[in-house]
Amino acid sequence: MLLDLSHISYLKAKDFFKFFSETDINKLDLRQEEKDLFNGFEYYMASIIFAYTSLESFANEMILEDYKFESLRHDKKCAELYNKEQIERNISLKTKLGEIIPEITGIELPKDEILWNKFVEMEKIRDGIIHMKSSDRKGLNRNTKEISYKHIWNRLINNVNFENYSKLSLGIIILFYNKKKSRWLQMYPN
Image (cartoon, rainbow, N blue to C red; front, side, top):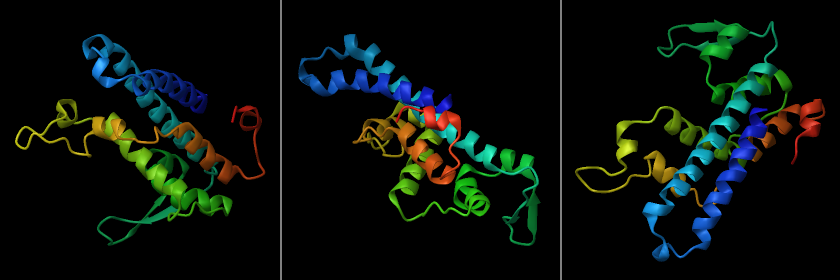
């Protein structure tokens, strides 16, 4: 359901942004078009959040009940052992997809390939949306009057390919599911 919500939100956002990409920006009265522009951003942000959350749900579901994950503590003085519930709550999705799920499935998500890099970018954008800072709401640096790529709005606007993160999440899920496709995955509209 989360993956489908991501895809539906992406399609709605795409419709809003299509209008702006096909219209001469100089002929727009942005005060009138502002509502549609913000609706497009809202749908795109929802698409990203739902795509990420679908991966989080998938990763948590893939962890076996008796699975244990050992990780070196941040101070490197000792190792910590996590059970399934602790992994679900305390281990990052990046670690789940990069280490835990590959160990469980025997299938690697290569960290030097496009799929991983797009996941990392999606995670940065998602984190920027979820953990928005006051500087993101302002957009401009007061001292330099510049917009930094770090600002969430700039990341969303400059996402040149207008990435469909629901397809990215689906690609990662399919990679790990391999031949064990469940009914929902077989029914999902590609």
